Image (cartoon, rainbow, N blue to C red; front, top):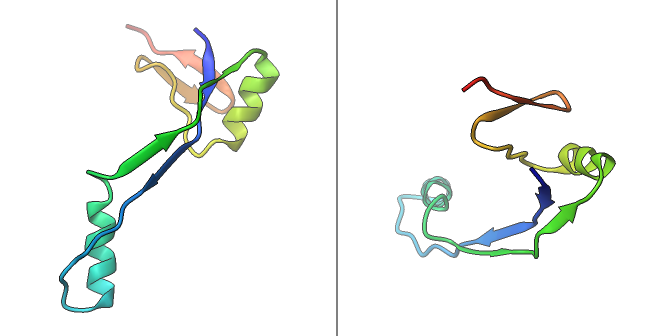
Length: 80
């Protein structure tokens, strides 16, 4: 199965009523998990094992197929 590298950018401006600045930050942070604008780069096909490993090392998140797991730098399929 091919691997791709995609950059995702997300932001949200919140107008929030709160008791104080700290509570406003907490509530806004909690809210950011839903309803935000998002943008992605064009998917970049990773053609070599070296490209895939480099992308995994530098990625904030690695997303294998749902029935797979990441162990170190190896991709292992979970038994079905």
